[in-house]
Amino acid sequence: MSIDAHLASLEKKHGDLEAELRSVAGQPSVHDEAIVDIKRRKLRLKDEIERLRSTHSTH
Image 1 (cartoon, rainbow, N blue to C red):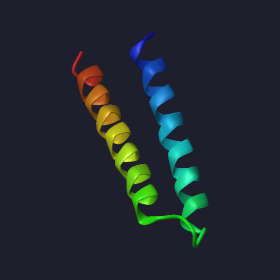
Image 2: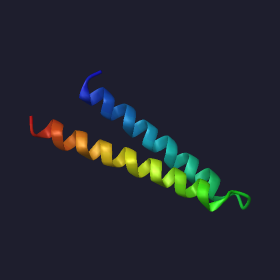
Image 3: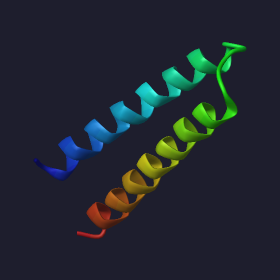
Image 4: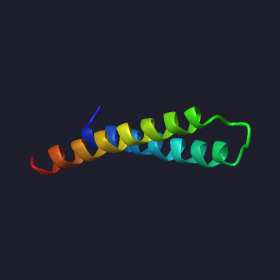
């Protein structure tokens, strides 16, 4: 998989997590741990996206 395709895949996953976060944030029965987990996964994806972009742009 090319770096650009991998970045696109990660960005899609990040967007999917954002949509999931908006969905669960509006549900009063959702535990804070679930929201924290989604935010943590989003942050990991964002970090990987930024790392790949910085690596890709230097080449």
